[in-house]
Image 1 (cartoon, rainbow, N blue to C red):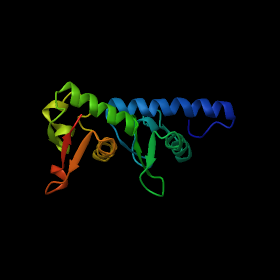
Image 2: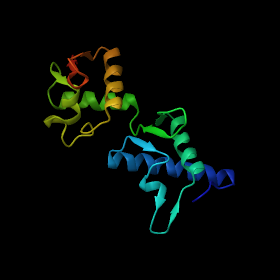
Image 3: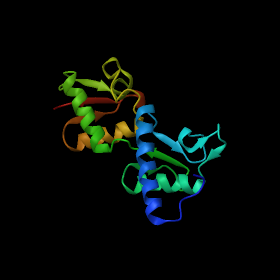
Image 4: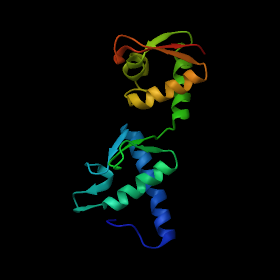
Length: 162
């Protein structure tokens, strides 16, 4: 589809299918940032030499933004943060991770959560730092943990109190 369908019902169905496809693809490939003007496998097919128009790409991503499943990272709407889990859902993933690993009263660094031994094979392994920090701050506001600064952003600590 190089352009958006002109019939409203058809267009709405297409947008819904594309939203689901983008979220599923990003989740399975662990993609957090999508650039509208960059190569993104879902938006082009070199074998048949077809690609989505910029208008269609922006329409699909904007639909995700309007549902809280994505956020524009720039005013020009060129890059987008894809939230295949909403921040609250990521917070729940973190809580489950902490409980499953017996870390209820432990201290970890942000990097250990993203790439430590415990996170291997979990959804947290390789999580975008911005998404992780927002989910951690959400949990901090709920009194589930405390974030404390290290000497650099790489060694920010998290004290869980669940």
